[in-house]
Image 1 (cartoon, rainbow, N blue to C red):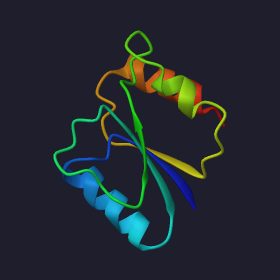
Image 2 (tube, rainbow, N blue to C red; image 1 turned 60 degrees about the horizontal axis):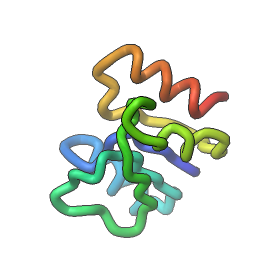
Image 3 (tube, rainbow, N blue to C red; image 1 turned 135 degrees about the horizontal axis):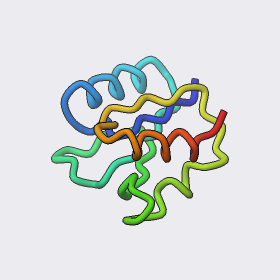
Image 4 (tube, rainbow, N blue to C red; image 1 turned 60 degrees about the vertical axis):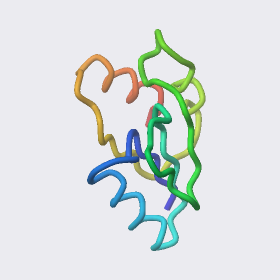
Length: 88
């Protein structure tokens, strides 16, 4: 399964990403690059999810992910723009 994890470098997101990677899933972590210990064996897309701050959402748009997990959607506006970028 091809998974996109928004956040995922700390706390429960990190454990989720490790579990998915260890089970053979293709994991992409989209994050700001502040991880204290970057996870090996996954794809890292560095940037801010706020479209005014970076092009991160442009880079995930049009990709075909089987599932998207949002570990850090704390502001409804940013959750909406992430959903719009990923699409169906």
